[in-house]
Image 1 (cartoon, rainbow, N blue to C red):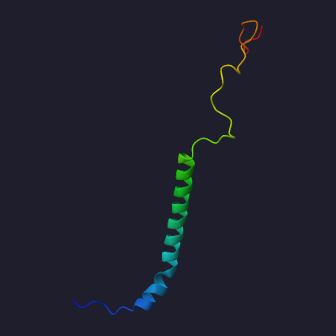
Image 2 (image 1 turned 90 degrees about the vertical axis):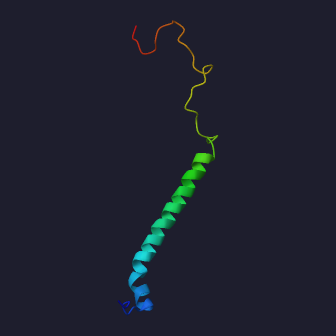
Image 3 (image 1 turned 120 degrees about the vertical axis):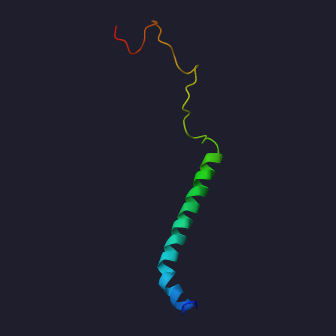
Length: 71
């Protein structure tokens, strides 16, 4: 069997749109991956409040009752 008669210039024109779209998606994913990895490995933000409470900063009620319970 002989190969078909192909025209490389015509093939490039026919596939230009899908190739540009695939390249754009791959670039978007690559930028997102770099952004995500940089945020994961950069450590905690010093300006962001901590999710753990400092035991010295949390004051216990003076009367010994729970704050949520009504007297």
